[in-house]
Image (cartoon, rainbow, N blue to C red; front, top):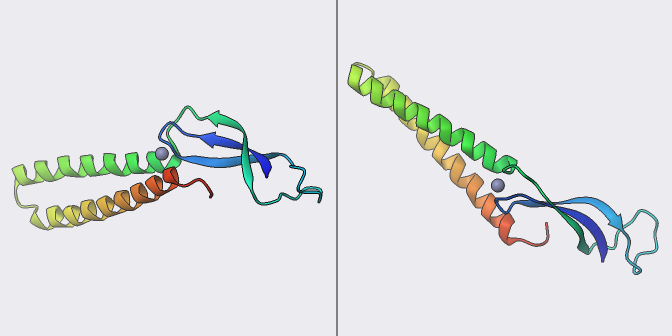
Length: 111
Ligand SMILES: [Zn+2]
């Protein structure tokens, strides 16, 4: 059991930081025994990069939805509206995928 720093984001995302201390089961210099323990937890003030990516995609969806509403009002933009709706569906899939990975990470203790 070797000690590592631990970074924790407000949303629950986390990752191991730098190696801190060897345990007495490990005698090779610079090696770790493979079992990680938390030495210190550092709380990150900002959302994790996955949350930021999801946020960016959500903002793009909001903007495209506004565009669609405007185009519907203006009329004559059916092809563009359909194309944009497909893009929105793709972005929704990507957000769902990111969210699943994010939640999996939150539940896991051994990455
Ligand atoms: Zn996050």
